[in-house]
Image (cartoon, rainbow, N blue to C red; front, side, top):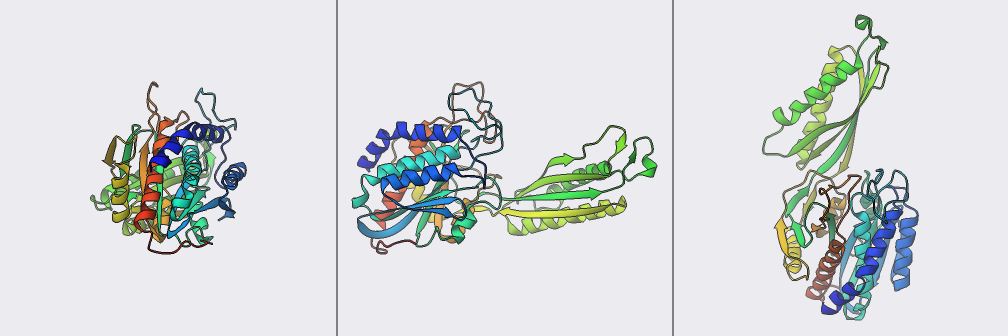
Length: 401
């Protein structure tokens, strides 16, 4: 481990350089072209076995140790968001309207730097390390499920991943056993009324009024239909009825999201939304279309593997605190990996101090303290190497695919 830590310290500037390069050239979910090429070329130069086009646009690389042993997978995502960056920094996005506003550039840079450092101790490793570089985490159905279907977890015994957090201090590792991030669904409600002149509402069917009633009625689902001990969110994020001020809109489109941990609650909310929409549209003599998209499931960390991360993180240079995190209503398709193999997903602090305020993820001024990248790489590296040595008699090293 001392050799690995030393090598990671040596490649830290390269990790930062990689992160800044990726930050300047972000690519949206399912539109990633140059990023996977960059990742594949990096691994090929290291001499790792590389598979491209996994699940569509994913990249999987394999570092096979010199001794028999288990297989550990480490995952990093690499897609960006449709946000116009507002940071005044030399490495700001050069792509209009697209930005790495969630730290995925940092995830990728950390994993590539770790891959380079691990090469130095490759012959000593008892087993295989799989580097899963995932596309399209930000947009359902996401890249994870397609990469799994394409075999990225074949032969894998355990999977670990981390997310850099702009709201947690550098040196902090956040963990949570069990449900840690919510199932994330979206829905559309299309209401068809009858347009007319704003001065003659009696001769029209006002879709905006119906839509407003629906928005208010949906607020009662969580407060009156869901057990108060069960976390749930129903949010309308878009209300589209653009029109002239003297025209009654004939149609309105509402879009929203549902966040839950319990599958029964998830099903209940979907049912309740449609019942409310159906009832209010019927009362207003309007028709509707209800479209519900089930997104990522809840991310549930495994007890043994999360305890393992807590233990190894406490021995990593730079880690100053290990904190139990509350469950979050944000979604993360790392959840799919944990449905197939045991593993854990944790938070690495990367709060950037010295600004007027700390900006959250998905904000146009989101940025991170790049020292968090090195800590993320060291914790993932420590976890992977420790797991291989502690379980080296479990299975022989062999081609994963």
